[in-house]
Image 1 (cartoon, rainbow over the protein chains, first blue to last red):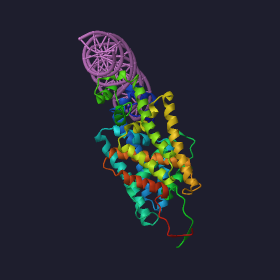
Image 2: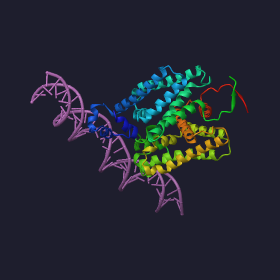
Image 3: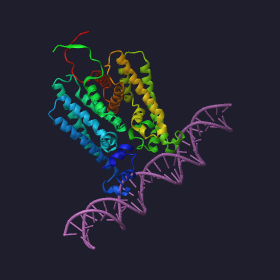
Image 4: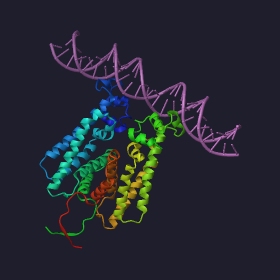
Length: 188
Length: 188
DNA sequence: CATAAATTCTATCAATCTATAGAATCCTGC
DNA sequence: GCAGGATTCTATAGATTGATAGAATTTATG
């Protein structure tokens, strides 16, 4: 379903049904064989984008890996999904608020499921002693999502960007921050 | 100029000139006494948003403060600008790409000026020994901007959010990350 | 008050939009 | 090759859009 590409490029209100039909190689009227309305099409694109996204997170959260590996997998999956030009995720991020309330309930549920699972990963990191006990896991999860989406937007517009490099730097920021560590002797 | 509020809520293409006029308390046709076109109105809103934003950064960068204070001021200024419902900044972030190339040159210049000044602040942090010498200042600046915009979007939608709390946590993330520090003895 | 300038209004045009209806075409299985 | 469903087409309705023109009104200035 390649209406996603048009919505991603021009936004929901900026995309006419003619634009979408042209991308699909059919005429405008033929669209309504597939969709009851343009709004329904947006709903399906958003759902497709978030579903793929959530499924990957489910696999990561359920896997038997240490915290660091899960965080790495999360960031890597999130960023590479933009490189693969998964326009649907961008559409979910940018256009879902234009959907009427009834059409957003499923999206909201999936979105908060994703966030909660990411929070769970941070809880695991705390329990294993890798993360500070005082860490606000809700803040942490939102920060990861926000950071990845921001870099995702940059990646989408610059195909020459080195995703592996950015992934590494994001992980490093999330774990260690930018500050210099003082020279230390370990006590244990 | 309160077209900003309409653009921020409904997006550029989702806002009709009638919507904008209604918010201003005038009739649709009267708009064109002020704007040559709807696009020109968007350009002015974007410019207003980024200009205020850049001016604050200029003051911070030029000020005589240590690195940590400048970083704090940057994040604080960025986040509180969303609390003050500076819709124009949101419009700049979300809608500027719908402007034709010629109208975007000034915006691009201001945007990269902001980013460069923020990079300069990180350079200062490196020179003063607070930040790691290996830090990629371009990455760092983009990360700060992305993180603040992501939290800005959340703040705009939830007026009960504690901005001071978020500012603190963002600074803490940027400087120290989420990981636990091992127990250490300082050698110096 | 009178004149001019600034501002807003009404009315309207031409273009574009979403959506529908029914005809035309394509594909599949017998 | 023919029947029938699936898919696409054309044509069009009805609403909304951005923008313009000129009249009406308000505001400022002498």
